[in-house]
Image (cartoon, rainbow, N blue to C red; front, side, top):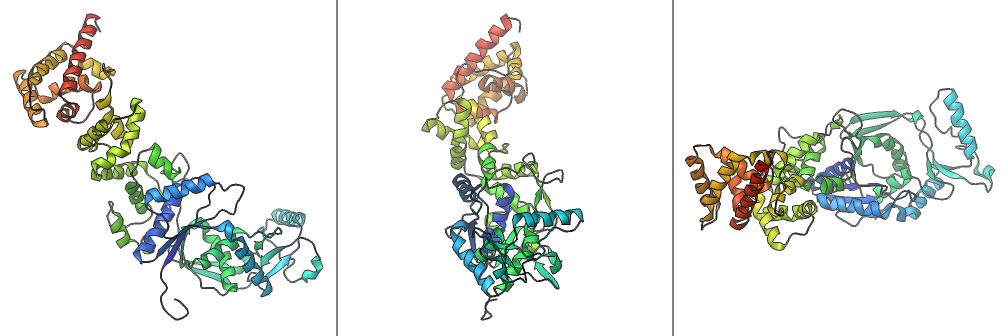
Length: 483
């Protein structure tokens, strides 16, 4: 509530550190923030926490922005860059100092190292002992100092977390954390609080590895008499074996899911949505439906397990739902990489025409691309071992019969082709599958492909007859050699 008692509009934020890619866990955090803001008709913001100048890179920032754009999670306003706000952070630190909520600490690094060693030897919690908390700062003279928060020592701090529930920490466990370093630069803990306040953030939705930080950050908020945000600390993602998520589990950059693994953004978002949040038995949830349903009450408290098989199955669903032209554009580069040349516009059009045949069984864009390569293979084909085995005397006889049946066909369509091939099967008193097997081997060099009539129709009469002729010649040579 605002000071006037009016309900404030919801404002959320996603605040990644640009020290690497946008990893999958961060993408889920961004998604939850975006959906919560949209569900409540609020605003979703992005803050780049680039205060670690040694590790922050422009490449990482670009990767984060690119990943968010791909997922449809771009910020409602231009990103805020934390490093650019250092003067404002320092201003707040000095406000706290002047108000008596913070103090100058002149303790030398070696003093603090000795303190930690003593605490370690005594098996005590390692925390600052407040040695400068009540001393006259004049005793420090002109020596370097840090500014520390004068944290509460009595009582407890309570957070009514929207996901974790009521969480309590005794104030005696919280030390006087540093707000401003001796070189005048702000710490992360201070910068986060000031930025959230200045950005008007009402709900801090982030990983539960930040839960302990919230108790310390509240000390700053209360000392400044600022309105406290609603905290929602969501459990982290684990691997399928229950261990902390690592690269072997899928803790990769979002770009890897797009570029290397061939997933669609809507599939990734749907999967991440269901990874720790649920609504009944619904698994396939569109973006509009997700906005309608999403709230923090549906977020579970236990870590979720990443399952590539479920993600692949979801991706297969969204591939089947995707437009053929869109898929062709997405797959085009992958096909070109596989065949080693550029597709013409006409060939790309053929790729779009082939999508109804290619996408039903595919779970990734790579699988579509692999399944499409037969359309652009250079003659003579290379036959794999299983395909070669089908080009025996019996198979060649059936291929020859198909050539005779198809040569005079004037109308080249799935329907007319199917009629002719079924006629060959009936004449040979064989099931259609017995004809399709050697045909597929001869036309694609493999034993798997889209439906055989689709393959024939897509390839065109001239190419079909040339490939069948090539296969007959290949089979004849193999038989002479006794293979």
